View 1 (cartoon, rainbow, N blue to C red):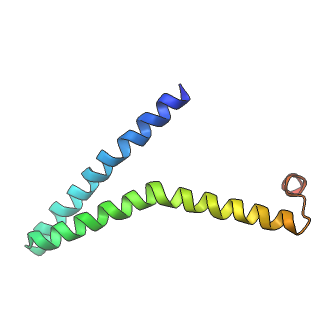
View 2: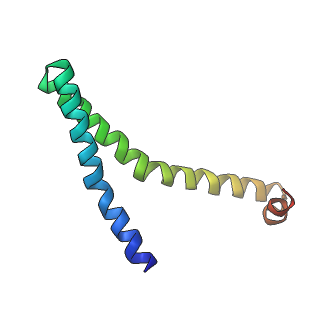
Length: 85
């Protein structure tokens, strides 16, 4: 069930991103009176939302893994240190 739920959530985020980008497009196009500016900001909004949903977790996990390896190189016991807090 976990895999099915994860797949459904992962599959739902691109349409949600497109919907949010469409909303940004409509609002900015109405405010500015320019379809080009609306299109650019809608596209940038889609890229931003997609990057935050997919790229940020990958980058954060990579940084976390690198810091764990760096601590292990210096002889710190990561598991024992985490229980002391």
